[in-house]
Each structure stands twice: as C-alpha cells, then as structure tokens.
Length: 498
Image (cartoon, rainbow, N blue to C red; front, top):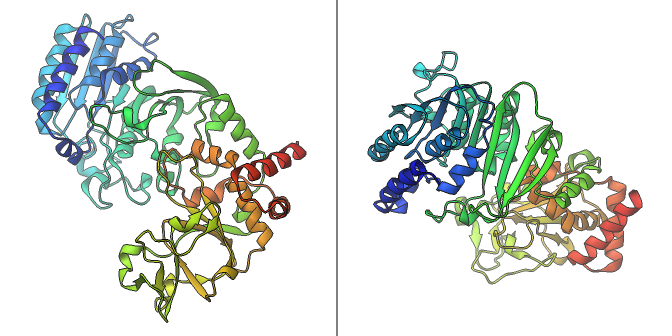
C-alpha cells in the first residue's frame, strides 16, 4: 500500500471508530478495505489508457477506492487524472475533503478533484427526465462501492427508472444503471455489489438493460461472505464485477475467487461469455473451477424444464404474519394441515413438529387452501453453513386424511399446471433430480443466496418426462431417499445418455 492510500485509510478508520454500526447501516454504507480497493483498481486496463483520463467514484464515501485507482494509475504513462467524487452523506464530507487534498499532494501525477455533495441518482437529470443530458460528464472509468439498501417503490430515486425496476428496488443496481449511462463508449466500470442481481425475476429488467449496453469482462467471488467487509462484520454475498460498455460482446469472462479479501489464494478460470450470461431471463452463472463448469455443461444437456412438461414450482400460499388469525397450535374441527419448511426432514414430511410453529390452519379462508394430493416440497431458505441449498421432501396425500392442506410461504411445491394429480413415480423422479449433489451444485452456481426461488426452479434444465419417470421408478425400487442413492441413479442415467 502506497503513502496516499495508507493515509486515506487511516483517516477513514478514525472516522469509522467514531460511529456505530447502526449509524452506518442506516445509510446503507459499508466502506471498502484497502486490499479490496487495490484489487478493484487493478482490474482496469490502465496500461492502454490515454495520458489524460476521467474517473467517477459514485458514492465516494471517504475516497478509498479513488486513492487506490490513483496509485494504480501512477504505474503507467498517465499524466493527468480528472476525478469526480459524488457523495451525499454530509458526515463524511470533512474526511472526504481532507482526503481529496491528499490525492493532489501525495500523487506524482496531476490530479484534479471535483466533489459533488449530491444524491448520485436524483442529481443526474433535471426533474429526473431521462431524456435530458446528464449533468455529469461521460467518463473513461467508473469505480464504486454503492450503498446496499432497499428503498420504497415510489420514492425520488426511482422516478424515471421503471425500465430497470421489478418489485423492490435496491440502491446498488440503480447506481449501476446510471453509471452505465455516465460511461463513454468502451469505458470500464468496476463495482463491488451483492450477488442478488444475477438471477430471479426482480432483477430481470436490470439484467436486460445492463447486457444491452455492457458485457462482463471479469468477476471476483468470495468464498467466505463474512470476511468481505471485515471492519463492519457484514454477512453479505458479495462480488466484484468489471463491465465494459460496448455493443461488441466479450468472448470470454475471467472469473476469479478467493477465501477472503487477503486475495492470497486467488483462483482463476476463463469461461465463455455465452455460458456466463444466457437464457431468456439473462441469468448469470458463475462457475469458479473446471468441476463447476462441467456441472453446467452436464445439466445444460437436458432439453426440458418444468413448464415444458406441464409442471410448475410455486411458492407456498400462507404468509403467516398476514394470516395470524387463521393459524392454530392444535387441531380443531375446522382446521387442516399447514406445512412448514421444518416439516421437511430427510426427504419425508414429519408432522407435527414441536418447533413452536402453528401446524394447523382454519379452512374458512379458501384462498389459503390447496388440494390434498402428492407434492414435491422445497425449503425456500437454508443457512449459509448448511451442506445443501436444495432441500426437498415428498408429501404423500395418503399419510394425512384431509381434503385440503396449506403450505407456508417459506416452502415451494411442484404440481401440474392443470392442478391434476401428479403420478407418484414422477414425484420421486423429480426428487431424485433435485435431491442430487449435481443439481445442488448447479443451483449454487446460479444463485449465491440462501433462498430457493420458484422462478429459478422452473427454469432449471431437466430431462424428459419419460426419463424422470424412469428415475422415479428406480428410486422407488431402492426405497432409499438418501443423497447417495439419488446420485447413483442420476449418474447412471447420465452415463447411459452419453
């Protein structure tokens, strides 16, 4: 670490020590440590840069990222760097101003700094009219650790940005959207952000917009999420991404990974861009080694998905906190089963569970009921430490004598689109797939979070309905729902298909 960065980090740490974590979380701001800042700065191709370049730090904080960028620029033949720092947290302004002076004093190249005390999103256009020219210039490079914070669907930051918003917006991807606009053609941007945008329906519009203008050149993943913001002790699935604004798509993406922000054990793999970004929803798949790349290729060889064979994964019907008056701790005359994720145990449904959750629901609200028939259930959430992300269980209607049941919304279930009975051997065939190690690995490559989304399950490649029936028959003959049994049956099937 050079003199400039070390001085700015020291000023930043003094500021951090004067604030509580709660105060920082309120504004969605977590500061970048020096090793991460240096790694991000090294991702830019400054060797081929012009002698005079322009840089934007959107959500600059105390200027740590910009300091790392300057020190990286000093290694090349760059003579002048014109920097724009945008920050609306008035509490960091004194530190940012002091650090901007250090940028000029301690660098051996000419540094021009402009600080804008503005909301990066709302300042861009007069009246938030996106048809107007942005008040910010076009930049050669953008670097940012934006705030990670959900905001109301109707607030000033979302005006005019409907084209990237589906569901609950988060500040970080709105920052990215406007940074794309602020980049020159062939400009480069490096962001450290949550991984949540890479899949799911909520981010579909954003992904479509991003890939209409940019392509991914490099991604860095952290194996341990708790070590990314060490000073803050933040549990966040985080990634560093480098994007290039160009209509010409990159052929390959460099995907690197490390245990933590020491970056001492970085492992690299080069993956075709069309493997990383694909599908009608532009999901982003991030394999970190050759084994994971082979997992993608294997499952991608299957030509079907659930809707194409007449099935659909859905989210459980009962949101507990909204329907508290219908929930019961004991079975009564007008109640039926309410299935929770905790009822899924080793591939079966164990009922009732003594875990404090209401296991029964009043049948007076028909909108919360579904026909009692065979289902495959998924847990929607797991902990980061659990060995499996996909945790499934077979529900058999004959085990519970009710006309209707209900499912908690922390459960996903699979049924036929026409809601008719699903053959039992198909249920077991699907269980064989989704309980296997192969599908669990595939889902982890697709989704870095601990949530299993029905939308993503519906789009995972699967074999034909006839093949699924065969898998189910073999599993029923074995009468063994273990992961090991599923792996053997699925691996044999894959070998036979090759």
